[in-house]
Length: 249
Length: 288
Image 1: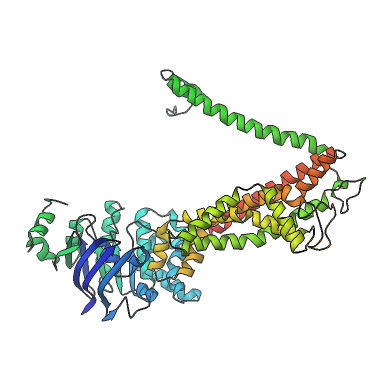
Image 2: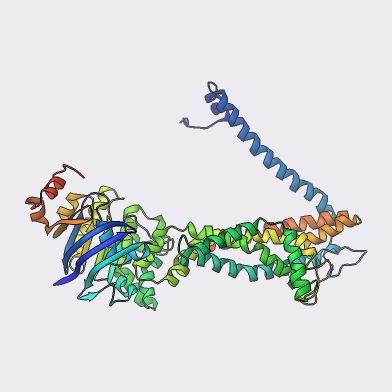
């Protein structure tokens, strides 16, 4: 079933057209990778899916984006959209508060009260993000004392705590070491059971390892969108082939 | 085992042997540091040496008489004045900074005008504020020389300071915190009050400490507005002098130089106490 559908989407930053006629369907409980050289628009598209671009001044969008058939720019309250479509950012960005409060922030925002209830959510989210064992004895300690890899998994746990349906990940491992990266990759594959995941990555091996489908972006356009296996083994477009074989990018 | 990366003055001087200009700069910055530290040390030492012997129990009597130039009324006035001025100007300054940073568009013309106005106001000599207070609060509003007129004058005086420091504090909160909060479906209000403000608290408190310093140290603006009555005020409409005004009067009359020094010590201690408390509060808030 189609979870997210993007139709005829154009995006401008002031006069610069950053995305050109984007059409993409994303199925439920799939991992989709966005690849392409820097500045090709992949992060920009990701941010239109939970309307983070609304924060950017001078950003204009035309076209349609629907979540379960409902237009996210017209028929949906923005905070509700962001609850359903969670986001993990490029650089780990835990809030300057305790690990517990970091995770509890989202649920509290959406009206969850009561210690027992919150405790449950926090344990479950941290377990799902594969970081529970490392932090269970220091939940009241500041989240800023964790290593970069732990912080990023904490941010994933924080995103999971509001029970989203879709998880957007903007180069979540670009600031991490190889061991943390592989932990997060394993985690993403694990999370596929329950979530639809869209991941922007610069690392083509990463896309090939974990995603079901891959979209290749170039200069604001989707050049090719296909099953990951096909895209990497038999690219249809010459430009895709050039990119994945490392001839440019 | 011998530590091989130990820093010694001799070692660093040696490394400058072939580089006389660096050596000269090094000595220059050292000299500047030593000079500024010595000046401060001398000042504090001078006040303490002259003031401490003159501190006595009589000095803390609740009434001021010509025989006993008690500092107590001025001390109480100072505390009331500080609290009132901060109470008026703190919320207004902080909220307007929140508007400028979080709500107004980045290159809005109105915002720039407000910013320039605030900067200009921050640079105006305090006596100008005093004159304004005299004409507006004391005369036009008919509050006469009063604690209230003084506090409002000071509130206007420190408003741009609090606004600007809060603005800087809010701006220094990384945008990734805001994005993280919005990304979880939190609205603007919640993001500002639960994420941005707590992270900016140390900077905001630093501004309030600076403002407190200006209030406690102010004389010119107060002589015109709060007057110089040396008694504990009956209510906010009574005149009353703060410690600095008290000191100014004692010293200019020339009859109570010893008490003036003692007052200086009291003032010094109060400022140290206020700064320490704010530091502790800031630490506590950021830890939680």
